[in-house]
Figure: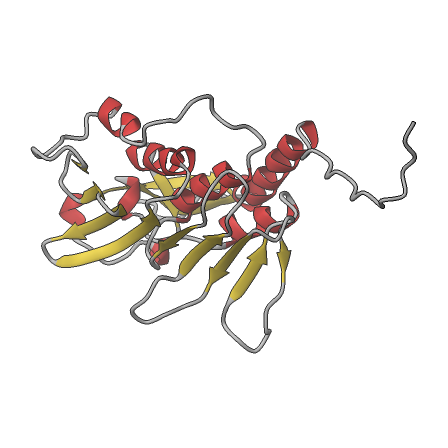
Length: 250
């Protein structure tokens, strides 16, 4: 059997369920935030961390390797119509799930009304184990609780915590809904063999895919272009100029 990929392709793994695919490449989140959404960076090059600030300086993303703590944190200051909030994600949280959250955060669109984050899970038939504020993935690997805040845990009997996410109770509902929508997706994620964590393979479906090298290399650039076009089509409203106090009245 020929185990070599065809010329011009890269052999990758398709991983399902997607929440077991491992962290992936952090650039999937950080590069579009900077290049497409205008977030500025400022960090010590001698420290293994990334700091990105939103254009209005109200949101800060920190990516910092920690042995026991969250690798990703997003803090948002209080605004005129919403209290401050905080979200964190541990190392093995798939970057595509985090990107769904940050894409919703930077989107110029705001949903009408107040979305219910449990709706995507209910539509995907995630069971409710007799508790109103909890959902389980159909395979029992992911648990979502909503009590004092949103808690998401991915775990296996052989590994009590694969990854976790914690969000303030005050996190805007449309952002939590973007997160639960990504979690409910059945679309497999693509990883290099070394990116897939060593977990219980009986719980995973792995298949080999030969992907054109050009398509693989351009995937991030395509994502940046799409988010740049979104921002250009719906620019943020201009800030009102401060009054000088010297205007004339009639």
